[in-house]
Length: 340
Image (cartoon, rainbow, N blue to C red; front, side, top):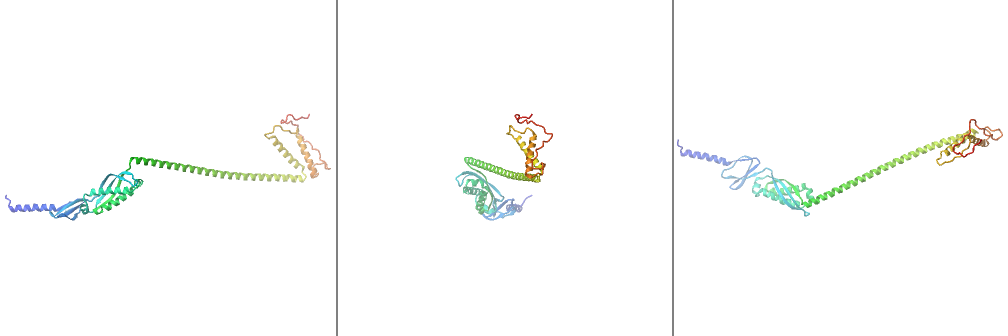
């Protein structure tokens, strides 16, 4: 079978159309943006999916990644405000928001962002003291983010985060900081110990105060009770004395005899129980005590009149000894004379 020239032309045209279609159909993956150029000039941006361009007239310019990207900032030397040399590294996160600006406003986008971040790290951290630098990383990150984002905005870039990863002071400075921290902790420990001792002394003083107050109140209550007891005893003695006095006034000689004999016996008991008594002289017979009581009773009858057991003419009768009393030989004084 012989193929004619017309058939060859048709096949060539079909192949050309197919090549033109393939050249004009562009598929953009998700997370990317393609810029389209017409004779070298930017005209539009292709979105993810199937797109058509004019073959041989329009071409793909830049394939921009619009996903968030991370950029590691290498370690660099920084001189702080108080002339301390430190080494710091960081990490930056950015995202392309405008593919055309990112493609045509800056050359080598990642290098530009890296250098911009490094210079701003030096400027921001160099304006702070070392202590402020080590304790305020959040403030450093916030300042870096604000400065770098403002600088990269004309490039169609959004800097989402800048984080300082590590800050390394010199070794001798780290040792000095460790000694300072140790001294500060020792000072805190001493302060806490002193406060504990002070609180303990205050509590002991308050306890002693409360104990003294309670003891004083107890002594006052005891004194009040003792005074009340003495008052009751005095009232009882006064009442007893008044009763005896009334009995004596009425001429009852037995009352005064009983009163004087009781006091006499109490006095002898006190003399006998004294701790410093070595020798005690006592009457040889108990009848002597009764005789003494009888003499006292006679005196009372003379004073108060013959209402007792007198003889009627005012002369006192001699005391009659009581039966059943025997002579006793006191063992306290062996040198006393004995009657036969």
